[in-house]
Image (cartoon, rainbow, N blue to C red; front, side):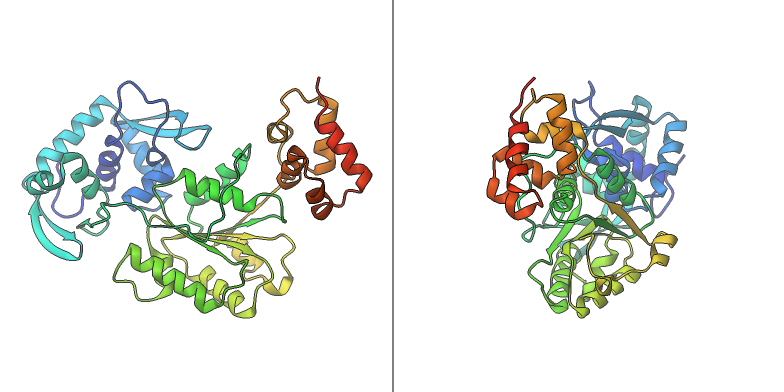
Amino acid sequence: MMVSEGQLSVNDRVLMHISRFAADPAPEEYSPECTQVGIANAVGISRTHVPRAVRSLIKEGTVEEVRGRVAGRGRRMGVYVVTSGGLRRVAAIWEELLDRRFVLDRDGERLEVSGLELGEMVGRKRALMVISQSRDGVLRLDGRGGNPVRMLDDALDGPESFFGREEELEAIDRFMSSDSGLLVILGNRGYGTTSLALKYVLDNDGISVLWTDLSSRPSAEGVEGRMLEFAKKVKPSASDPFDALDLQGTLLVFDEYHAVEEELVELFAGITTRVGASKVIILARGDTPAYSWFYQKEHVESGTVRELRMRGLDRESAKKLLGNPKIDDDALRRIHSMSGGQPMILRMLRDGDRKGLKANSVFTAEEIRYILFLKDRGE
């Protein structure tokens, strides 16, 4: 298959991207960019197009699917690796690109270069990256060197320990690979919605992210200001806050959506209908008043909005969070039942925080003494 004039095929761009992570022997941990979500974000294609592309590459023998640990994930998942045949194919593509003329956008200045000149300018490996990430036939090389924009100043520090939640993390993965634009993670205080989203964001450091905390009750104008600031950092030509909703490979997270003012309800209703290439995650309280909801049942039924409802931790994860690996099975069962697996309560138990338990649970003083006693029981 010869490279035609104009934009490379999606399959060739995906293959070139995957080839950048070739390793022999296989690494202990794979890059997040080798997953379906990572490929979609890097190459700039719809998440639904990735399975089709990799199936074709697997069929022709240039890519293999394996299961392995992904850096920062702590669990095994499907990743894609280039084969020896795939490396030969990439080498052939590169040879065909040496004489090709490209329009290169370098920090806003456009010039024409050949593949050979681009390789001499940035090196073959980075040249492959720049070409594979070209979404409109224009190659982009900016002063950030392709680094993602991470506006996380509004995010709280993550918990010092994070256990379980594999099903929830996989649900976020599926959302990121779907055609849905908005995911609402519902959970009451103490169930770890913020920790879950922050875990995902920190594990996927190749994605540009805007994190906005709504607990300080910002105005709609203030939220729009952050959206526009983020959009301009990703795409300097952006001029409208809603431009932030149409940036491939970006994620907008809005934390602590609860009882908000009407202007914010209207803003998020607008986000629901206007989100495009970006992905949006909203962390909402399950007891959010009805008048504060910004989406309708039909949005969920149509797939425009997805919902993920947080539950308590499973018993094994609760055991790890309690920090007593020798805890008696019956004591663990009782604690799990009484706490509902709520991470905040389990951390307070671990730390012996009587005041916190009294202020943040419905336990009586006697129940607090009892559950603290159970926590220290060993086999």
